Amino acid sequence: MQALLDWLDAAGIVRGPLFRSIHRSGRVQPDRLNDRSVALTIKSAPEKAGLDPIKVSGHSLRIGHATTVAGNDGDERAIQAHLGHHSPEMTRRYIREANVFRRSSTGKLGL
Image (cartoon, rainbow, N blue to C red; front, top):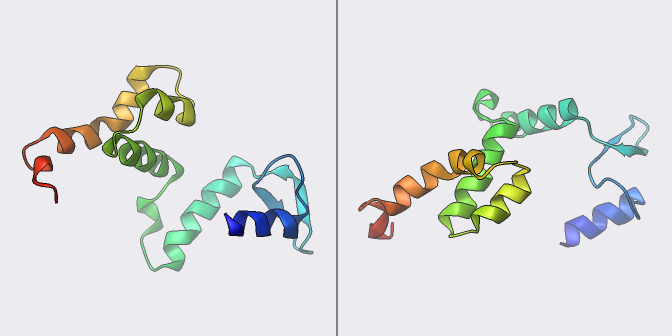
């Protein structure tokens, strides 16, 4: 929470988008990041850590979010709303893998 408050203070953000681009002069821009900027940012993090950026995408982060929340008994409707899915069926496609393991005998081992 402190990092968020520090960012808002340093960027001078009082309303509007949270994630914004920064001009090469260091000035925070008023508009939100575009999808390409987000994709490049997502790809750069694993690369900096020495991991393969091909294996990470915005989509994989969305699936990871849904899987983790579902695996922790999160509400399916809350997951659907957060991901912006129009149908429960789409959300279920995202969380299916979490439920498969959790409901199996192996998942009941508590590992």
